[in-house]
Image 1 (tube, helix red, strand yellow):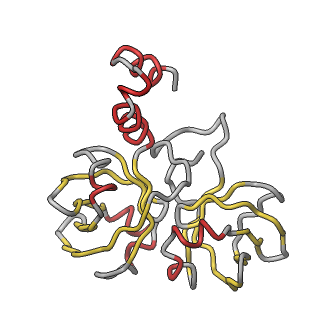
Image 2 (cartoon, rainbow, N blue to C red):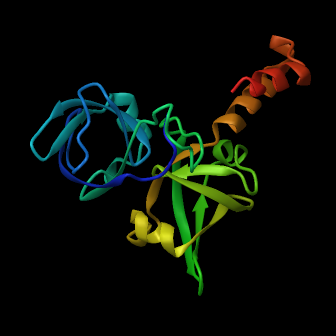
Length: 204
């Protein structure tokens, strides 16, 4: 589990086959989970200046892999004693979004992210979403996209300052929205009631 709060920017040294080599000040242990641009990966080697992680074929097909060069967001897995300042992020990429429009304001910048219908139906106004591993709030759900307003502090602490229109980004929708949709879609098959769903959600 992660929070969607970026630890640091890591420098990509190489990405060959299934091995991603990063240069970073953070030093994990072998076997640790690290979210890289929001995708949960496993550290398999530790180097003097960083570490290496493995990417399965499924992961490579699911993520915006062209963004795994130059700088990437990294976040170590959440410890039970940590403070949860973002939202609960699993590090499982649901799909790809496309930045369709960027509108700067005097305070903050609006990012419009185009999504397919499957992702869009999991988005709710003022709900949470992770974009390239960054925990953000959905301001508005439109016909084929969402609008996010990113404050200056978040811009400085993330790579969003580098992002441009037409860039693809990793999307992880809210875990509880996915869970609720799954229960409702399978309500008749599983014979779930709203009372059952409420008990399940209350256990998290």
